[in-house]
Image (cartoon, rainbow, N blue to C red; front, side, top):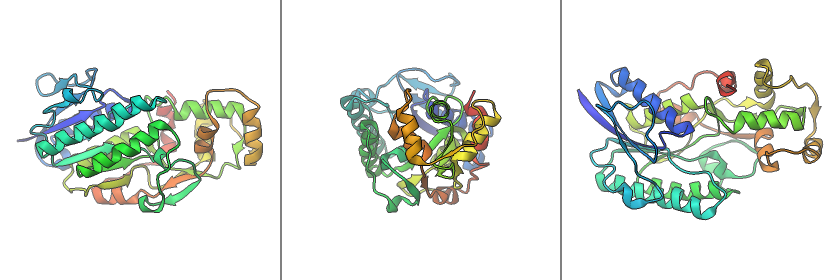
Length: 314
């Protein structure tokens, strides 16, 4: 049986840990769609991820903030899944980890001749919406945070190395510390269906995103390098999302439909951790066409992501 060595960064993070689980499940299945092959994971990061098999997998305590620690990391690798990075308001930290760390890692992949590279970015690079079912070439990035700006810059290094760059929308699932908690806070501060509740959002469950990333890295079909939206092709409305959370008892069922100017008035009259920019992201239309990547991989996106909120709210 052939062995595919897969280098993974960010294996202890929210999305990266789901990617690791997807890799290990694929190995248990004997390689699945990737054909009869064994999978050996080389996890790169400051902490050892859970689930590695000491007899088959390796952990290298390297750090994106220390490029020299990445030397030789991609030797003999069939694929690189770069899901490491940092979210910070400190521009220097973001540049060091997200930009310079990515550049160093991609140099190692190029030096080793790594065949497939998958790089995680975010639809947040597009900045302020609303955006309505735009394809990658139909909307120009205009990030408003230093973290998003650094991730957009990092994309260039990944693309130069031939990577498939994934830009997911809102990611739901076990370990989510941002989407569902923010929705719960906003429902308390502005208890209404924001701007009527009909705006749509591009969502993906963390498990579906992980399955997609592994499919790009190890699937039978080679995916050309480039930028791809990576979420469910069918958007979910604000009302569908909030109703799902209400059905779980996470927040009360909201029926009042409030125009957006009134929503902002109530928002500014209340207090909380969520910013107006984040409120706009979660309340107004932010949808991006993503059928391309699912068609190219031949994978199914599964059920609508808002139906998986039970797991995201735990």
